[in-house]
Amino acid sequence: MDKMRIIVNADDFGRSASINAAIRRAHREGVLTSASLMVTGEAAEEAVAWARETPTLAVGLHVVVADGQAALPAREIPHLVDGDGRFPKDAVRAGLRYFLSRTAQEELARELAAQFARFAATGLPLSHVDGHLHMHVHPTVFNLLLPLAERYGAGGIRLPRDDLRLALAYDRSHLGTKVAWAIAFGLLGRWCWRRLRGRDLVITARVYGLLQTGNMQEAYVVRVLRQLRAPTAELYFHPDTAPGGEVLGPNPGDLATLLSPAVRQAIRQRGLCLATYPALKADAQASTLVR
Image (cartoon, rainbow, N blue to C red; front, side, top):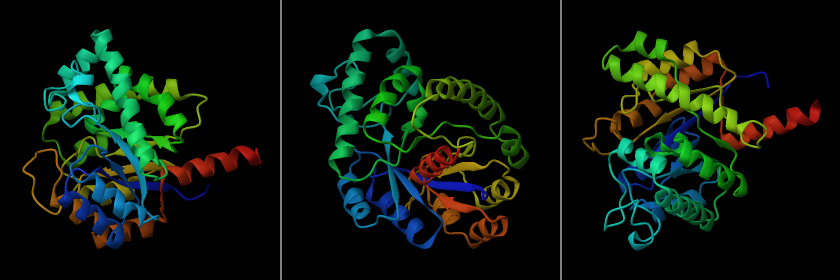
């Protein structure tokens, strides 16, 4: 594999009709290669119907265990959700519960299995697994979803591996938050990487999007592409056709970047190859056979 390969992914597929519309446009007119599906999103059925007609778009599972709707009824997982079946918005609060409560862990195992089963019921190949608010790298969650990812044939798993120095060189706002996230997710990523050894799942050498989440501007992405040295990378976005008012996205700005001629030109000038997790997995398997 001579060329550097990049996955360009959109999160929150199925969360709303406007996000679905943004993902459709970013794939048809822009550089988007894959999307992560919220199987419990209010527009999930619409997303699945379009994805079935668009085999060029790789679709993975966007696991939701915080700030979103559960797949199971509230009565079956009362220690995880409120009466409407929604997880707490506070990811830290949810994470502590998953660490400390054996009952919550048992319910979490059933909920994760239900989300994977719901994805399988779509008939779409499972490109990859990641998580809303990156809760999939929480140790309790990761240990539970890892065998499910293998059982359902996922190509890969996202491990946040952003570049703090590059992000701060571009934008030093929210410095404390960016440093804290880089440290926390760096430690979690290394722990998850050790758990992945010997398993048939690929990860990329770099993942960009954490430290500029909700603000993946054209200038930043072009800089990432021009300075990229890793053999593989994922850049993930939160595109929307309508302003959602959320600081961390989704938003129309991410969509504009995915449609940007400057971004496409940077990819072409560097000779980067647009890819997906299944494509990287096939490359890895071919390399193993050659050796």
